[in-house]
Image 1: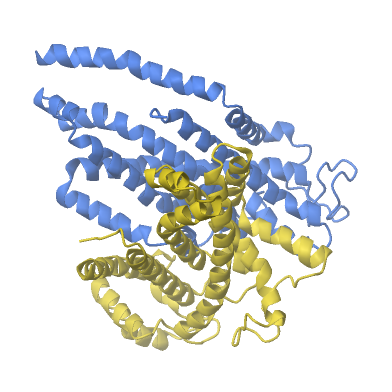
Image 2: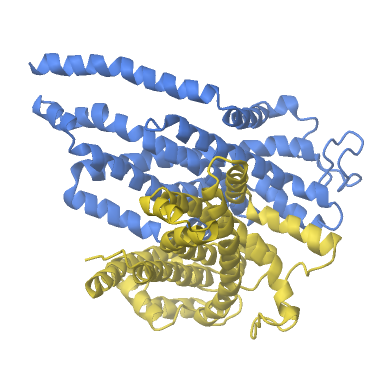
Length: 295
Length: 318
């Protein structure tokens, strides 16, 4: 009896899950605002990936003769920075670091925090208390402060920045995943699976994860924009990339001295950060609406 | 009620202890020997050994932590490597400056956000709602350190209406928000800081007021013939406790996360102290500031929670 029920449930679940994704896809297809911002993200990503092919100049080549030139000066499409480097090329290359710092910490934290949350929620009891109370402690820090505290003491650099941001995002993701796990842990279908002899591992992989993945994914997608803003903020404070490598936050910090000379050029890196973080926010909002089955 | 308050306060204690543990362990995150982080580079061997013993670094880590904690509890957070001043005094002086702009920002945001959020909730799906929602997304997406620079460019450099940075000639000792000479220095930082809480509070006002409007008693009020203004008053009053809670949390975030704004405006608050400490690798100052800021964040959260219980008679927590 057990075998057939499980199979029939599994078979019945399959087309439904496919149609869920299809529903989400159909909703997104007609959500032009989300599609527009998704296109911007893809554009920024493409520019970052193919930077060497697109960038008109070497982003590191300085020139004392062409310092702080305005937008559209000669061949410099977006002007030059305080060391005479081409702004357009630096912005294109800078996207690499911003996207990396936006996506990598959230991705790592989703896996680590997601697993921690599932473990805490599934095992419960003392393990839950131990994990969740530790998470509470890290939750008691404002995110900017925690990121600054960690990378400030460890010193600048990409690796330390990545680690700091990942640590910032693990606690909130862990909470989301723990809540989702506790909600489904005692539902009938989990009991049924256990009664039919499924191991804890099998229950987690087949039954829990499929219910935890969506809320974690939606929540994590909303953190990408936060991560980009925080990462650029860290390099603005000198805690990010080692100079001369181009990075939006650092460009903003270095050009701050030149606001009296070339205000427009100085505002450019900020616009790039703004546009990218706004796009991720909008796409994440759109995704949440599209994936919300109840509405 | 009293029991709830007592339990809530008791619950904060382990969190606060955890926070001090994290702050203590920062010393071990810093590369190299903790003593090197705490002492000037030119300290003599004898001084090092003496202070190593004083700080307890020759003892096991739990003992070190307890020693550090008891010193911190009595207000001794060590001495800044740069200024040779006690860290505690420096942080506390800076904290009041941070509170000034954070409170200003959160009040400014609250005023605009409640008005716009209520307007949006009364016009769900209509243009007014879309504009308000759009503004709140912009508010949370904009890098506020960049916005600060843009505001400086426009209002200080181009128009020359407001000072770009600093806190005025009087300095931080006697900040008086009623005198324009001093207040004008705070305007740009406050406006810049207000943007994120504006977006967040607006979003939660919109959903809280919309939730109240969906309840039956609103229909009764309409049926009774009340005007729009009276209904707005009823709806906002009902939604206010949860909005106030969001506002309090945002205030905590602003105080704790003021580093970027204060760096841009060279506003002499805790964030400025923090960025100075990072720049000069002044670990005692860094650690002390982070400890004070994180503990005040914990206390702000507690205060918000207790206030919400006091303000909202519907919450009868056992």
